[in-house]
Image (cartoon, rainbow, N blue to C red; front, side, top):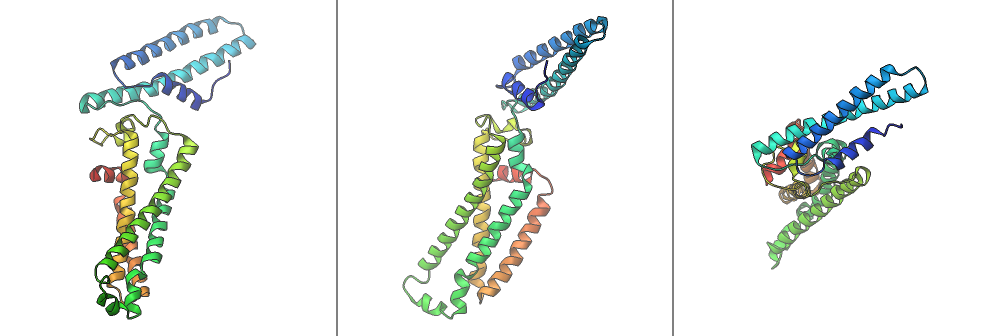
Length: 277
């Protein structure tokens, strides 16, 4: 008898106990637990009566694997009790799913998220600091404002360009991160309620996991757009590109410090999406 890898056993249990957590599923798990306990008791009784040898050693391995199965089932049963209690209190049905991918995307891949934020800020500062300030620096502001489209249309078009570029960059960076994680760890149960991921139990809306991820990346895109618009507004008020770069860098650093302080709790990003909804 060759023991299976722990991850494989986990996947077997996720498949075996898939579906909405309810009384029937809990009863099934409890019955399976009792069966394993009975098997262990019977096998231990037989093991004690066996003579030393290869057969007894193999039997010992089988009993050890049964104990490991019991331990894993106990973990699933605890999650089932917790999920059933949550459903009774909130009325939202949840499933027992493999949360590893979603926990990593929501709170685990901190370094990639920080790198994406830094890249977006650097992009915005370099691209948009001179979008208005360069006009003033080159003494073109009065000439531009004297034209028919120079007062409002040009400003609006530039702001639209800022919004589009920052949204595209944010989408590319975040989708690259998402595809990498999904390819490495896999996606599952995207149609289950997002509360099936335990760190999202505070979400009161009946969103699926897929819906929540879409909202999360939309919020991140909005955050990037805000950074781009702020840098563009600073450029609008600055006398030179260098001044706009310097002030924008200070403002972005301040935003990072504020967010870092607010993100002391790893679930801040999840809470931010909840507030946005």
